[in-house]
Image (cartoon, rainbow, N blue to C red; front, side, top):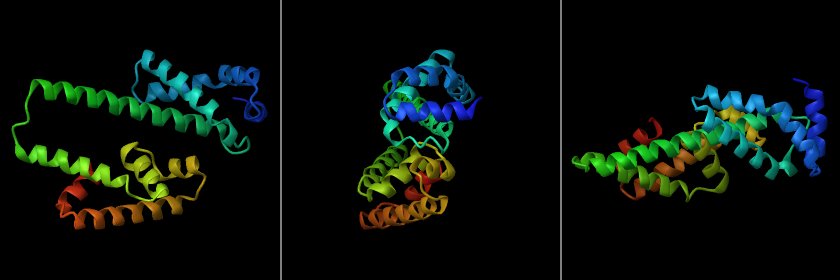
Length: 188
């Protein structure tokens, strides 16, 4: 792959050139498709994610740093979209199972309620902490991927994860939520 050419194309894309964006797509779409397939998507789903990836990339073109891993940004966008798609499919399967089987055990219901309560309280965190904890625990990204995506150091990501978990624990302790549920949620 010609990274010099990609860097030049990304400069024009940043300025809004659709012609250069099409050429960029032709050169790089195989990489994005490969990421999707490696993460277990079917060809049809992978093609859908490739399209969505380039749509998001186009929308984010103002923030492109042509000297700092444009391919990495594409891969990151694709991975996030794949994870969302997989989670959505899992949720659909779970919803279908719920329709077939009613929840019989109160402890299962309690775990669901606690999990939802934790997710609701994540929304109360400061914006940076909320974004980082969501990317890490709910989207499944590594601290390095988050660091590259947010253009901050890995240490900053780790510090924000620590602070976010500490703040969440304080909020949940205040709400008298069983702390085992807190740890179970983050260790799933």
